[in-house]
Structure formats: structure tokens, C-alpha cells
Length: 247
Picture 1: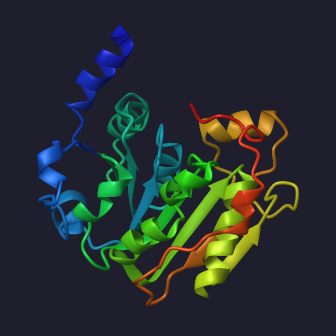
Picture 2 (picture 1 turned 120 degrees about the horizontal axis):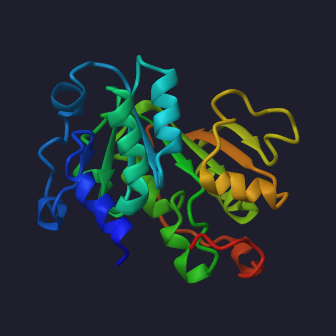
Picture 3 (picture 1 turned 90 degrees about the vertical axis):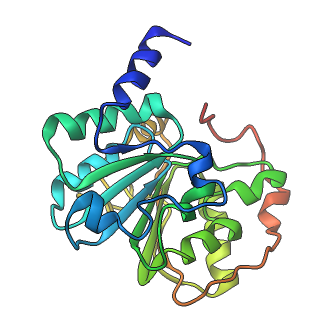
């Protein structure tokens, strides 16, 4: 492990905005902040937005800076990347942003029913192989997790360069009869990107330089809580080498 990464891990421990629980704190157990984020972490009653797979936290930081009447939490397992966002929040004194270092599989250990008002999923690994479809962050398995913590009017935003993930998510929405507010397969080419959608992550910059269109989907789960598995025909034709690596 490089010295710079070790330095970042050490500095992460000093950030009040970064929550890093031990494994046994959240495995089959609730974190102490579950249901108490507004009261004990943000000290306000404002809505909460999550950015799942936040990487360096570009979206979390940008949205928190622009919208002081909402709270933002970036979630990722990569501590060395998350360091950048946590450091920016600390240095700039941004009080409505925080970070959680954890696997997204454990997200329900952190948030109570209805505690989250919005979810952003920005450039996740599309998990192109069919056997890994359940790991996609818009798969039925994850939708059931989101349904347990989203408010009844909560929305999910997916921004991705992956046409495969975009089409898969569209199929999921249609299959379960979910409400889709936006489905755009080229937000810049169509002129759809507004100030919020124009926030660019490091991955997005790389994909734009390659000439890849950026897609955006916004949908809601309504009152649905259960999402039985289903097979998507589109997985039968995917070329595993057709999209760039997330490594």
C-alpha cells in the first residue's frame, strides 16, 4: 500500500464528516445513527439525499454547496477516494454534507424507514456479466433495500455512461410498473443537462473525452416494497468488452 494512501486513511480518521463503522457495528445490526441523522449528525430537520458509490464525492460536495436547505451523504467503500470529498467538506466548512465508508449492501443498517428523501447513483459499475446482474445498483435486490429507507415520495436518480445499465434500468422500471419521470440517453447531446446534471465526476470527464453519451434516469418506487427477481433478455446479447473498465 502506497504512502499517500496510508496518509489519506490516517487523515480520514480526523474528519468529523466521515463515518467509518467497524464491520461488527453494522453486520446484522443497526448503526447508532440509524433514524437519528437529522438530529445527531446534521442538527436540522432538512431532507436527506444519498449519493451511492460516491467515489471522490464530487456530486455530494457540489449539491451540498448549492442546496443548503438539504442534507447530503456520500456512500462508498473506497476510503482513499472518499478522502477528497471529506477533506473538501472539512476545509470549506460545509455543514450539510457527510460521508459513510461502507459497502452499499449494508445501507439499511444506517437508515430507518422513510429517513431518506432522494438517492443519486452516479457512474456505478454496470456489472456487465449476467451472473453479476444482481449486483447492479438498480437491480431488484437493491431496490428492495432502497424501498426500506426511502420516503413515499422519494426519487432515485441514475447517471451513467453505460448504455447497458441505462437499458437494464429502463427494463426494471417497466417490469415493476414504476413511475419514471425522466429517461434520457444523451443529456448533453439533447441539451437536457441542467446545472445539477452538469456536475461532472472524474469518471464522467473520462467518458466524455472518449465521446460516450451520458444518460440519466429519474424514477420512484411509490409504495412498492417487494421486487421479485426477473431475467432480462438484454443480458443475452451484452458484449463484456463493449464498455470501459471501472477499475
